[in-house]
Amino acid sequence: MIATVTLNPSIDRQLMLNHLAVGEVNRADLNHIHPGGKGVNVSRALKSFGAATHALLVGASLGGRWFDEQLTELGIDHEVIITSGVTRSNLTIVEANGTVTKINEQGFSITPEILADVRNALSNLDLQDQWVVFAGRLNYGAPTDTYLHLAQYARSLGARVAVDASDAELANSLWSDGPDLIKPNQHELASIVGRELVTMNDVIDAAREVIARGVKAVLCSLGADGALYITADSAVHAEPAHPVNGVPVGAGDIMLATFLGGGANVDALAGAVAWSAASVALPGTSIPTPAQAQAVEVLVHHDLDAQRSLVEVG
Image 1 (cartoon, rainbow, N blue to C red):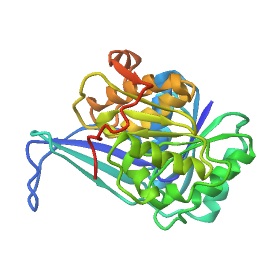
Image 2 (cartoon, rainbow, N blue to C red; image 1 turned 180 degrees about the horizontal axis):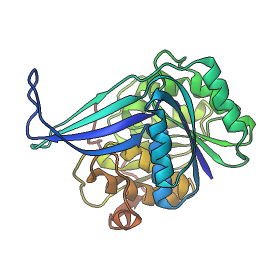
Image 3 (cartoon, rainbow, N blue to C red; image 1 turned 120 degrees about the vertical axis):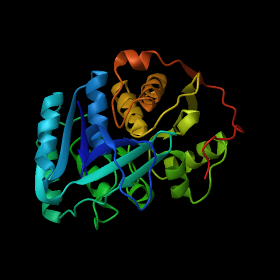
Image 4 (cartoon, one colour; image 1 turned 90 degrees about the vertical axis):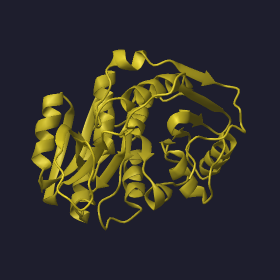
């Protein structure tokens, strides 16, 4: 069983319109709405992948019960801890010419009492040798070391820990002898080491710096370039054999989910990239089916072109 923790879930909506006219009234079609937040997306992808999962999330009084309804309908084992406030919405606007605009709300604040409830909920799960994923943007005003303390608590329960966050929230989640895995993209990894990552070798060097600080392994998503899986003594690159087109919202969450569901090792990398790439052509934060993932051809490189420039830099 792979547990996910989402402290700041979102109602993910995708609107379609011909052209976004700034400063004017726009008429749009709501073509997709999904329960979101990175941890929730990981659990949704695990469900589609066929892996057992438990989604633990905090939901505000406005919108929180909608998550309970949606996850029940999806057949995902879950617990929603209800607090006061308004659950945030993440809005993706897709224009006819392919332009994508995202508007993400901050969400509700979180209290020490709610974080204590999260720890209690984790203690009620059998986490011995199981993965716990802490993922997503923290709540407004939450200390940037929130994931650190929750991850250390999960480790004390016997869990293996994965963290998917960004900026200070990711940097402050690192400690000696943990986490077992982090899943940044190259921009998030660059923010930890404080420099731009331009080539494959730059990513590997940055990952090794982070590993030297106590992280066991790094799964770095590279957008159009696929992903790198890096440990202290190995680095493997996987990428789609053919370019994929679409909106990559949630693709990194799906990569992490299927990497963990596939065994969290080198052998799981190709499948994780296939599932991630298959999601790009889908609307909103839709999760691919196994058949859609299997249709994506993936190239795996054990002998890396270390000087290869990354497509998405800056």
